[in-house]
Image (cartoon, rainbow, N blue to C red):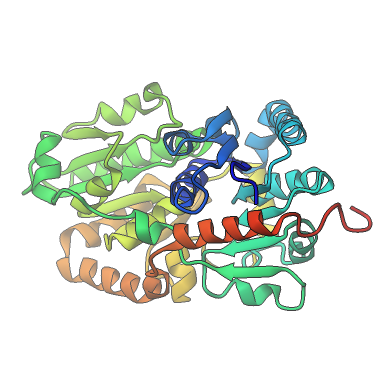
Length: 389
């Protein structure tokens, strides 16, 4: 193994940046001289990665948003391939975003670069036929759900369950009183945290629902106050309407403290809902896609739920308001019992606890780093593309 290997990494959204940054930090003990290059975000940069592109350039959601951004995505794709061609890294780590990364894996493998895919595509939810595409283009697969490795049995691909990386990441450092006081809010008043997402498209579709629901809920719940989260990928101007609401505080850091201080969380479907679950807070999950994306999704998704908590539970333990159901009226109806009935909120939290028990396994980033070091030490695993690739 080279004493100072170059390692390529690509992530395409904020949640991937979180996992990738933790992986890079965890790798320092095993690969102290490694140089990480590629596409990442603020967490990757803080861990010492040299960014050629920022994750915000690729952070789009749904078919319509992708079509608008396609020229930029293609340019970044070719830039990353050219970077790998010049640098000849010892390994390429591709974090989540399988639609982008399984395409990127093809030219990288032709360069003889071993490929590690960090986070399995959700084959159990839609397009199960991708299993063979993953097996052809990836050398090692790092799974974050315990049932995923079994899906790849018989494919020849080594898939390892490493635990969910959020199990190490999610923690509260300040209690409710300290958090709300720091934001000039009253710890004795009912508090809702608004998490509209980390991609501009989902914020544009969900935030107006949140704002109108907050107005209506405020008329029915005395003293209601709000914590409004803005992801680093979202410009401050996009949140102006929400922040104009009464008794409202912006959250741009210490998100877990804000979630932990809330009596209820409105959260966009995705990684953030897992963070809320791990913090054991009552929640309502929302999802709104562009019409074309929703049309396609209804024809390919094979499971009845979108939220991971509900998927793991096999039941609707958390309300999900999807597409046309994601209205201010429905959000208020689902929120009122959770805010006004402590027994209802406690029952939901207990159900969440049971559903996510399998995710509480620490050390995912360290296990991921150990596999990266193992692949670097082994050298090229399967040089070149499969026939037909």
